[in-house]
Amino acid sequence: MNTTLPLKFSSLYKTPCSRILFSLNKRTYTGRTLHPKKIAFPPDFQTQFGSYDRIYPARIYTSKPIPRKPSVELVPSNVSRPAYANLGIPLFKTTGIPKLQHKELDKMKVACQLAADTLLYAKSLVVPGVSTLELDTKIRRFIINKNAYPSPLNYAGFPKSICTSINNIIAHGIPDNRLLIEGDIINIDITVFINGYHGDTSATFMVGQVDEKGKDLLHHTKYVLAEAIRLCGPGARFSSIGNFIEPYGIQNGYTTNNIFSGHGIGTSFHQNPLIYHFENDEPGIMEVGNVFTIEPMFNQGSKDTVFYPDGWTVSTKDGGRSAQFEHTIIITDNGAEILTK
Image (cartoon, rainbow, N blue to C red; front, side):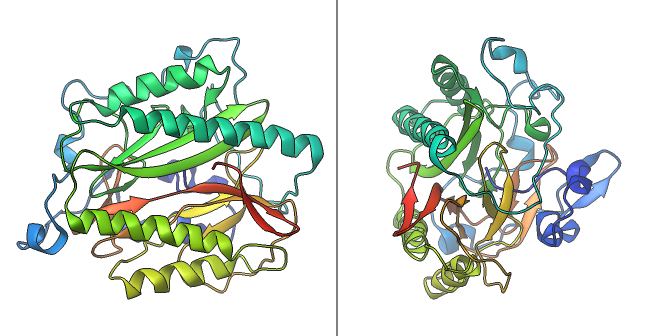
């Protein structure tokens, strides 16, 4: 789950990148509700981006609205919870970049392996006719049965245990009653909390048969993540990640939005460093023991985004599809190790 939060929590972040994490020019704020700007998908939409179902704001809920208060009571009291679980107030560590060693690293590996196992289980559930709400329920139970907590639940008030982002939804889609249909692509973002550590991973899956443009989008997004990880190692610049990802996307006809980032992770869900997936000159050198996520998103069309009324769901402005793949990695003496493989 990347580092963009609802507007009301923006004051918690004092990092230089706050201009990106909370780009107010991408939102229209009225009262207590975030309203999307007028959505006008291009007339040649299907020809330009391929054949798929568009997700509009009015179609987010197909029955009763999702409760504003997350149901943290769905998690048994014997399961250890992160500090934000009850009040929903996240904390972002802004001092230094942690370096994990020995017992800390062992706990981190357990969390990341569980995240990877959970994502594999999630993949087995992705079929036409299943709702994202059903995915959320089954995946939450899977995590709880491992004596772990689903990290997104009540993180800054997020109402569900996973993020499910379909087709033109870039990130933070809230599970609801919409049924998956043939031709969808869906990103499932998994983060778990166990033994005091978070593990984070995501992937975009095809629902049945997907058109060639959709397949190409997934191929290039998955490939660019793998190649970006190869760049990581002691002495490498954090900026080298985005300086590779964005040009690769442009060469292959995709854009990379600039309001989401990867992030450090450990005892906190989000912490330093922040990993930009676009060209940048941010300072910072990787050191052995640094743990962070890389989670590039490629859009078919414009990088411009629209926030839907729930305050979380983010769509491409022009209706193009978006794909994302994510791993948590640690910097080692020999390069980088994928912890969520």
